[in-house]
Structure formats: structure tokens, C-alpha cells
Image (cartoon, rainbow, N blue to C red; front, side, top):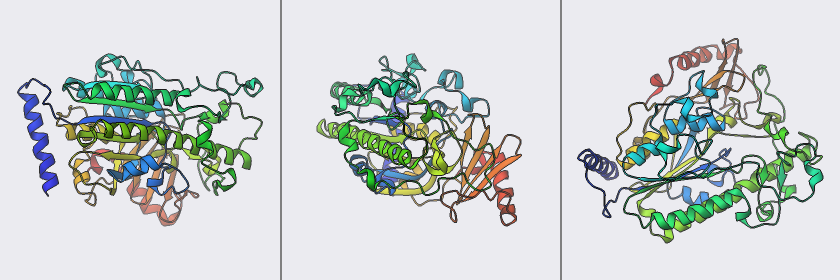
Length: 464
């Protein structure tokens, strides 16, 4: 009760200060924000029961904040997911395939823009929006740094690139320092930025965008060495779900890279690709650890909101899929951990939340008035009471060719494609790996009817 009242009082007082135009000065004690996005990261972390993954820094951080067990993206693709989350607007059938935030919602106040207009100094390092030019002038106090998924590989054996010299091989493990790759450089710049931000007379919003474990699987050798290839377990369900419609597909991105003469979807391919993904996760975890350690060294942690999130899920060989851009649970569920001043530590919640909820939550925590266009729901009440009744469902759209829409509710994920001629239902309590589509089964007739109604009614009917 005390925590809830404390947060409410703080938010009201800060909002009043802004309303009366108080001049910000060195006494401004509003919370800073560290906004860490990790590309293509599904909940493949120790703090999400991924005991096979070495992610000690994020796992330790999770004990210092709130872990959202059931967080979902609005689009299972990088660009549209980020455009939705950073504008706070849900995608419709047209916008779910728009990668540019300025085209997705040209008049929307972006998340960093809301903080900048409230007096925060805002910085973007690497991949926050899908491209650094998106909404840049209005969102960031400084010119954002860019990113390139494919620019950094070091393998000198050029024959590996003969099939696709633009993208290079799908994995490599050179014995190089962290800073040889773009994520290491992003981390180094962020550490320098923290040093000067700590001396400013205003709060800051620092966006840190890590590209790995996005393809290609490039990480310094020491992170590959954390895992023994023979100990890596591959997916057991290397087959398409029974009764799955033709519309269920996966993004072919991994096949854009040179295969190093490893046959696609062979046992060697599954093991190698998983090894690469795990190494990349551990690499980024180490970089996150450096940022969190610097926050502590600068004595900023106690007054800083830290958010770690993934922009969508990913398949690691389940159903012989590698990637995203479909509406199965592995592609829509994301990791989300938030640490904020005034909240208890080591909290987990099963309440259903969505990436579109991050925008209003951060504004709520910082005492910033919420823009009227936001579609999400502040998670602060759930953070105060993790076991309370919350949303009935999460809603996800995919525009990458299949035009599907999914509702995730209770133990079910239900999808309709196009004109509803094709649909999927997975009972995740009985079938957590989603190996059989039961949408046409007589026993689930009433469930399909209820979920189809919920999907057509939309998010407003699913609010807490």
C-alpha cells in the first residue's frame, strides 16, 4: 500500500511541476531512463528458465526488478514492432508491414519525444527505431548513431563469401575484443555518454540498441567458448505443426547468408545455429553488464528506470523454422524486465502485457502526461500488484505475406488469416510446443467461437 501511494504521490507532484512550468535545475530529481533494446531476443535467458543459457548479468538484473512472464509484441518483425512500440500505436492491417515510424504514424509523439519535450536529454545509440533517421529531429537531443547488421565480419577466408559476398556467412567466432563488433562499439559509446549525462542538470533518456542475437551470428570467440557443441540440445519438434495452414511460414533470412557448406536444417546446421544464437546472447549480456556496472559506479541506479526488452520472438529450429515473421508463440512472446525506483525487487508477474504498454508505463513512472493517441495501458498497477487481474489477451498482426491476426489469451493462441478461410488454434496447456493445430477439432468448437469474437472485438474489450 505504501509503495502504491508513494508512486502515485510522486507522479502527481511531478506532473504539477511541469504544468506550472517550473524551471528545471540541478535539483531536478526525476528518474533517468536507460532503454535497452535487444534485437531478435526471445525469452532465451536464465531468468526465463533458460538454464542452458549463460546470461548472468541480465539474470542478476531480473532479481532487481520485475520480470514479465507473458509479454507479447504487436508485430513479429523488427521495423513494424519498433514503430508500433515507439509511437504507442497498435498496427492495423495496413501499417503492420510499415517499417518507418514516420510513415507508420506521422503525427504521433514518439516515446523519446515525450521525454524530450518534458525536459529530458535524449540519446539514441544504434538500433532503437529501425533506422536512425526515423523521427530523429523530434525524438533525440543529439544526432542518433546508426547501425548495420552486416557490416562487421572478420573471417579472412574469402571463399566463405562466394555465394553471398554482401551478407557473409551466417556465423563466425573470431578471437577479437568486444569492441571489434558494432554492439561492443555501441556499449563503449553508451558508457562515455553516461559519464557526461551524470554531470548534466537535467534527467536523461538513453536508448541503447544491441543488434545481436540478430543474424548473422557474429560474436567474439570467448562467448562461443562458453558452450560445448556436444551439449547443445536441438529442437525435438523439427516438423511443421499438424494441420497447420499453408499461410504459416517463416522468414527466410537465415538463408540469405553463406551456409559454410553446412546443409540447411541438417543436424549440424541446427546445432551450429543454436550455438551461434547462444553465443550472441551471452555477448550482449556481457555488454548489458558493463552498462549496469557503470550506472552503479556513477551512483545513478537508485534514481534510474532501466528497461530491457526484445522486439519480437524467434524460432530456434522448432518446426524447422529459423527466424520470426509468423504468428506462433515463439515469434510473438518477448522478454521484458523493468527496474524502477520505489518498487520491490525480485518480482514476477503472469499478467499479459504488450510492447505497446511500455510507452505509457514509462511516462507514468516519470510523471509525464500521457499523449492522447496512446493505445497501450500503463503497467504500473500491475507492477504494484503483480498477481492482480489484468488484460484478457494480447493482440499481434503479421503483414509479411500472410496477413494474419492473433489473439493470445489464457492457455490459447488463436490466429485468423485473411478472410478467415485459414485459422490456427493451439492449446498451450496440453501442447506447449504448438505441434498440432486444433482449430477444426469438434472439441474446440466453442473455444474457437469465443476467441474469434475476442479477436474481432479487439484490444479495448480485453483491458483490465
